Image (cartoon, rainbow, N blue to C red; front, side, top):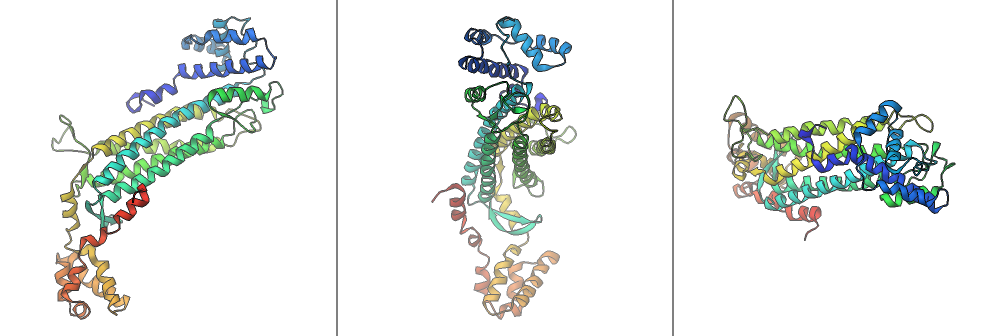
Length: 435
């Protein structure tokens, strides 16, 4: 991913230096295990650790690979240059390149998952704080983009919190899904390497042994991982889309924080655009676009092919780096989001009580009016508000058929906003586990 949308901690996981360090640890731990089994001399295993404090020369490895056309062999050659060719002659014994590549990839994915999990936890904290801050801030709910019935801004934040809390579980499951390693040799039969080596390496790297690998770790695990990232990205876009709508000039119920000195348009000095949430919408598209290739990686030929390799070299870093940046940016947006309660109330009252139509409908049915007739009566008066700018309550009181069933006091009672917020505490208790 380009530096503009990268954060250093996540990007570092995918650097060549980090990759080669993990490859080295896999090989060194494998040598230790083989020495314990008496397969190789302990002195040779100990010699490999001479490179532990050495920074691998990426340029030198690239130089060797230009000749060998094989990245793992290039690395092993460079490692032998550091520890000594005779001392390194048992490195990689019984192993295949996929043992190193796949195990390393899963280490990188688990480390990336740890950052993403922390990102979501930070976002949850921001959403929870804003939800409680605006628990009773009335705003109009919308369905199909049209005024429906009153809700609260706190409930809006709370539903996003609940969605992201589910995503937290998904990320934890996704991490567990890819936290496996394989040191099983060619076609995964352990013919030339003891399963105890795999167990030792996985233990040292915080993984569990893959129950059965071919020459590669099964890619359904990775498909599930990237699918989870795609769902999280979609949730990011869900929140961003709501904020973009709220910031529209004719709505203006909330807007992104506009810092001192910030400019909204090169042509129009008055502009304050939702640039951050628009950016998040685009970033979400990128992450979701990497899910299909991950799903297509599941089907490999026989015990292995490398059709998945080029895909993962791209989507591994790009998906995790992009989502990390997006989650961090969204947390900042939520944390600093400017909310306008007065505009929310003004928008709610824009159609002069029309949002209380269902309460009047139900009241008429409770007075013995058939649902069909009650709907007709309420809709008849509602259309006068839509088309003529009339006041809904006034029209209801003047309608003789409505007045025959409901007194003026009963009609007025149906326009109480508090009626719509009486269960907010119950919903908050469900979401946040509070009494």
